[in-house]
Length: 386
Image 1 (cartoon, rainbow, N blue to C red):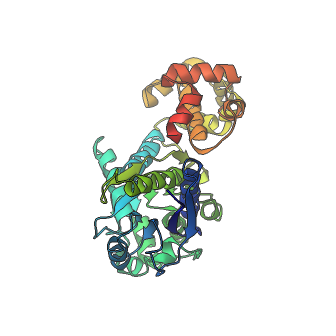
Image 2 (cartoon, rainbow, N blue to C red; image 1 turned 90 degrees about the vertical axis):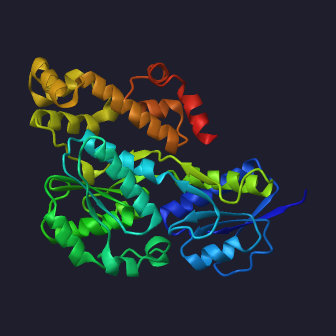
Image 3 (cartoon, one colour; image 1 turned 120 degrees about the horizontal axis):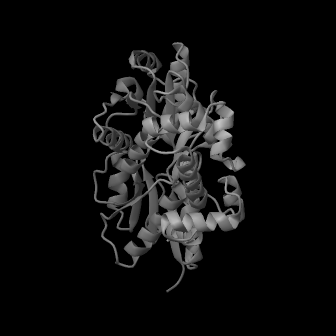
């Protein structure tokens, strides 16, 4: 078989698009016969052996479905045609957001997105269902006509980062009406960026009154805020690689034209916008903040007790009451969470991952990881790449 021409109708302006393209391109390590080309919207498709594309509207979906070329789509709106899809596991992203806020002691929760937009609705539903399992309510805001009227490639694909949302007045009023303190999950980083600006415009403190979490881990969005935004890394690289594998299967007749592959997120990248804890004991809140900020310093339970200036017995009793665990166990749990995140999102050597996760040595890290996860860190990283 000769060279195969693969067209990528993708934007690289945002972090998700860049990560997706990088993941897709990495697949050429096993398919040396692929020639990748960026395709402009509206270009002829019949010259390609396979296409992967973001899909923003029904016209795009129809054109791709009727092209006769194997296509893998990354949908932002609801699909109207049978196209294969490789997408983030949006429901899992929502569950991860709910887990973060619950781990930080919140009892009030809210979601901000765009009603009728597929990825937003699925993230909202995953968030709300995870909360419903613990009998917690979720306040919801879906954008309204002003936001939806401007939801197009300018919002998703291009580089514009306007300081205010088109529905900023409505968004501000809704945020002001929420019970406090509240954990606010936004459908993506741009929405979180606008929510933070709206919150500050009505005098709400972030994270004390409203803790804000986005999705995409877009550094160029999350860093242009004060405080800096926390975000879920949705594993765009993994989605891109899964899209390439699915396209390969389509071209080889091993997959159906309406196959859907979902890729799990890699974890939460925490910054100041969620740097708050709301358990009943302020000592527990102070201890957790210290642990999170000092995790890489190889801290021990004794360091926590010394930081608080309180007795071992008192602090442990409060931890068991609020968290159902011990200080040592919580430190160990958070080290493993950070190690898994670094294994998923970086190519760092094991010694550096051990150091950044707060382990005293690489050897101890390897032992602790295998004992907890049932596999070595090397095997864990390899399983993700597959």
